[in-house]
Image (cartoon, rainbow over all chains, first blue to last red; front, side):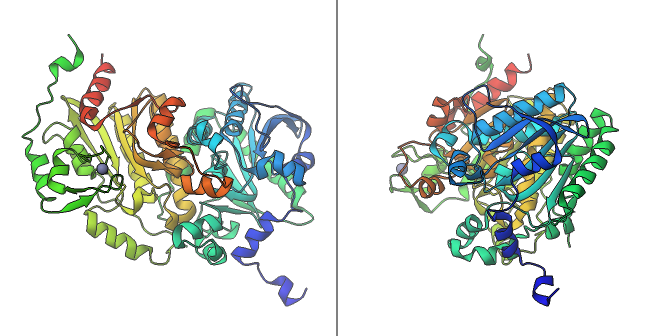
Length: 265
Length: 280
Ligand SMILES: [Zn+2]
């Protein structure tokens, strides 16, 4: 391998990799990791938001609930899925399916890949804040195992809304951040063009976040990615499933409770 | 007999309020809405409401607490909790130092216990004047400690918010405070606690989209901007100007997102009434 290829990508390069159009989306992950997926639709309040996929599948012969962002694979799909920018109805659909998973004692697996929650008139009118907050609150008390995997872009509250999990992993080139680097640069320096510079100080790569203890593991991308994910999920689900529901909930609470900025690299 | 019959609003001579007010004497402030100049001494008398157009200026936490709580009943908690600048973010330390000096607080959230009409309650105020009230690790930690304190002592919890959202300089540490505070509030509520979330101008972003939207009861001040994405971001995204009043308290009330809009002059009475009703 040449030296250039062996070099670690910069934070900004990882952002570009995380957004790359050929990168696997939720449809591929579901297809490769689960069997018999049945998609469920709608929030039972207003409409179905295609930017969130949710449904039931088998994982190693065990029913699980899978929920995640969908960006779409071509322009028509991108538009239909609003490029993975979720509206309140999407978060409410997710929450409905999570509560159902709890009722039927199915573990929940979430896949995160979003540029952020949708900033639009209808989304605001229909309670974007409320939908995100209620989704996090719901996840914090689920009495079943919850695993979240950031597969691409994990931007802002729109990502965290479905990432309040017992275990949080990231793909090697995924990013997870308070805001998109462009949004960050424009808020802090009033200049979206300084996004590459923002990437460096935002500490948004899987490697940085693992170092801070903010995520629990990194999944290497490559030929073995899906089989690694399969093995990691199987092992982790088995570990979490052994815990009593109240222990699970208490430990998940502590998982987030302890994030107070004391960690230093 | 009405609940509030036993509760009088004669609090004109409160020494703590007067003392606080004296510190503002002499200056003038321009109203951002009608652009009239108002004497700060006059504004302290009107509880920071513009005498001309009724614009609500932000209130300092100590002043809000003095207006709300019974005389000398407030005791501050966790005042030493401060951010440790977890990312060692460029210039953040300097910015924190400036804001600490200007406000006399370690960070944007002031927490404590007090009484209103002799009812004990846990109270917190997010201070929009401290780095735009952004919620970082310090504010998140204090909100959670206060919530856990209220849970342990079976006290009702009232939090006033004013915030630009998450604290950019703390990156993902800051984002995680959304999950942390939401989880704490959820736990508090499911154990029987009463949480009143009081939204003031502006409550946006990561604060609006976490604990602040989880009140058993959600109150707002008139005309307060309350939103997830700010108006500028939305205008840039959709390429059109927004309708008048969009994302203001009245709009949220109409869309079913909040319970009531409460004028500042009725804040104390309203909180008292709600706490009393939950004691019966
Ligand atoms: Zn005015």
